[in-house]
Image (cartoon, rainbow over all chains, first blue to last red):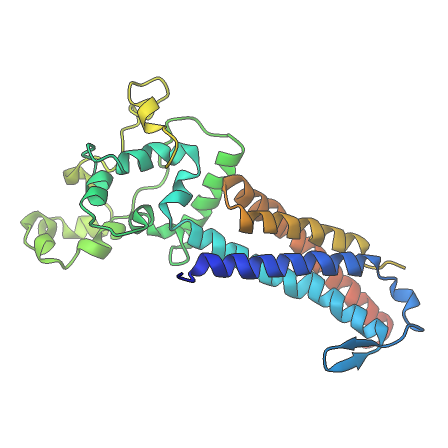
Length: 228
Length: 62
């Protein structure tokens, strides 16, 4: 059995949270003013006055364990968005994911998927700004998407507010023999690098069109099937 | 006197939210962790540190 990041997140996340809950209950019930006469407390290799031990436990419960839990959960957030399943868990993303996995689709995402040009985490490979390596603007965009999705303050079909960064494509394609052999890539190189021109201008739709993703369209029911 | 009563209450609720997100990740759990649990942790920590500072100052240690 492989022991990947998700097992570590489950293990340490549960450990920090359960321990935090128990120590919070203990600290909340501690009467600090009445500890002076209490007997010393044994903590592993040492014995501490009861008041000092209670203060140490309060520090662990309110600073150390929350810091650990927040770190683990944020790591979970940024790693979880790598997986296709993570993207598909928001139903507005289902048309993109279902279309990508449809062998009969000719969109750019579907062609990458069925030809196995990207082995895993296909969404993230082309939208890599979202993760730890992405810039702050992309992360803020992710949080905005999360807030709008969970508060239902959006309308279908969703539209991208930001321009897709060509660098996401160039990360894999630039420098390959096939890419370099195409003269127009050199002619438009500067405009591609500056995002003045986008790859989709020549390479077609990346995902289903907004018309296909509009509720009531003939393709809508097929595109919105639950993720398997 | 229970000095850290409501700080522990905030942290307790935040830990429960965080645990839910860790074990059952989904958009709603993620939103609860991001927009509620983290601020609750921060509020609890700031209030705790303030009380520590006040305590140290009352003992003329800072």
